[in-house]
Image 1 (tube, rainbow, N blue to C red):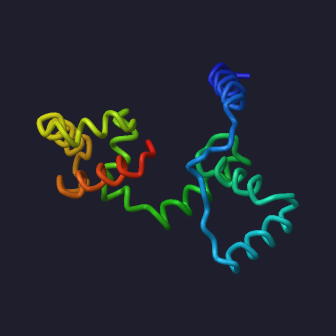
Image 2 (cartoon, helix red, strand yellow):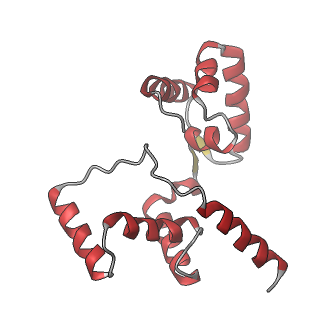
Image 3 (cartoon, rainbow, N blue to C red):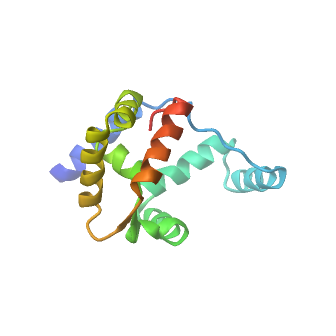
Length: 152
């Protein structure tokens, strides 16, 4: 077994210990969506929808996946359905990726204009040639997140 695979396997084994119900994941489904989901769940041999969805998330994230083909197809689905990231850099993604995701930091960005401008400039710089959200849109997003009280 090569060293890279061994490290990956060790990291996955450690990550399994963090498996828990995530309070911010709540699905709103119509009756027909729910019935059709349950049908897919049972057709695939799962006993519940959560395990089925977790299986897809494994493929989508490349973490605890069902195999390389499944990862590739999940990635293709993502790019077809939500692939604007090729052209657009969302402020939420920047905040999460660069550790500006806690409520205290986001609240501080709302009250300290100089801090916000520095972070916004960093966001624009990190976007390279992609389109970005306006300052006004970013401020509105921060307000919505802080008012909801849920960290990214």
